[in-house]
Amino acid sequence: MKILIIEDTEPISKLLKLHIEKWKHKVTVVDTGKKALEIIKNEIFDLILMDIFLPDTVAYDLIPKMKKEWSGMNIITMTGYSSKDVEKKVRSHGIMYYMEKPVSLVELKSIIQHMSKKIDN
Image 1 (cartoon, rainbow, N blue to C red):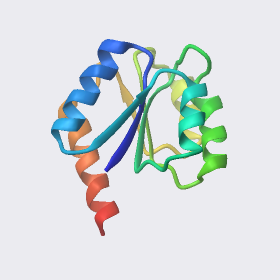
Image 2 (cartoon, helix red, strand yellow):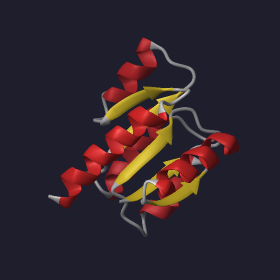
Image 3 (cartoon, one colour):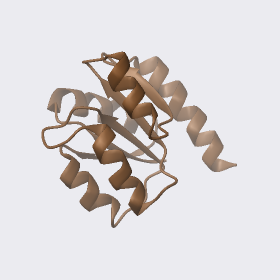
């Protein structure tokens, strides 16, 4: 699968990239919403794994803009600053999963494997 990680905390993005590549997936990393919008204009990703709070935007503002490019995006959001209000706002945009940091790599691997099987079928 082709996966886009949108994460501004470099140690987290490096760790996610390292593990996801070990699971035999192609990974691209960007650290702002602006860069994410630029890259999805030219590439299609099977899955987007994104931090909710980015330096230049928040996921619940960015997701609708991304979905204008391609409405069928599979999105997993993650945050270290969880609240029911934030979760509700993000879920209202049709995300697949909402994960709290620290992200469980076991859970993430399971989700990615499930997605990969759906895409292959």
